[in-house]
Length: 247
Image (cartoon, rainbow, N blue to C red; front, side, top):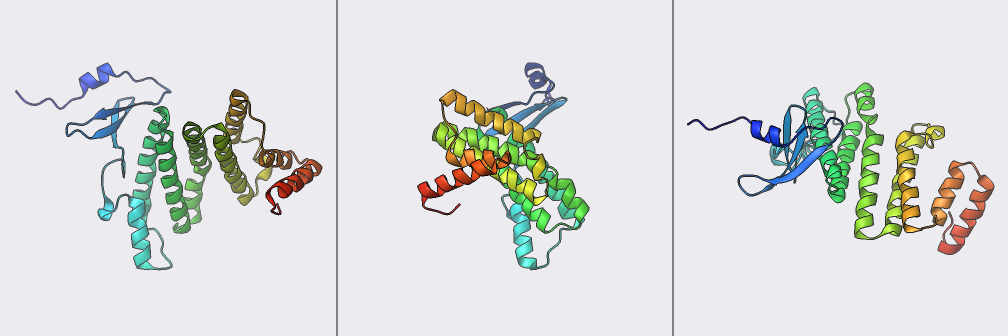
């Protein structure tokens, strides 16, 4: 009898839920762990280490690593070719799929690591982009990746070190968001941004759940955001007094 090659049984046993990320860890035939994601007409299987498709472009762990080697050998200026842009996009998508799977499985440290890889690749492709239009088409996704990174790192820190440290991690992520809005001269949009709002909701939830008061740094950031400059000046002076550093 010919060996079956369809996945009918898997699809019957693992129902697809529209609007939800369905992911699981399973053992492959050789014993290694792999990550699976249920999609509408099938499933994706991803490696949990290195590049999600298990490939080693140019014998490097990822295509990002391979590009770094190519750029170092080529010297300045180095510009991505159309083929390299397409391969970078493939890696962006693979790491996106694995990142959302890690989030669904509450593997927050792994999600943060994959977000860091994507942000690093975004930095590289921005710096070596063939044109501004291509750059902007990718930079538009930076806030979304930063959101995932901040959310995952905060929740991982909560599990590993506790709520105070988690709030510090969240504050760092919000500052990176603020810097990004400043870079694009859109500071007035910061407080109204949907992703920022979701991070602020996470901050408030952590404070309420663990009965934590805002730190001086957080109070200062909130005062500046609300344009309460007199209060901000007082908080800055108090923070400088406590830390011994000029803020």
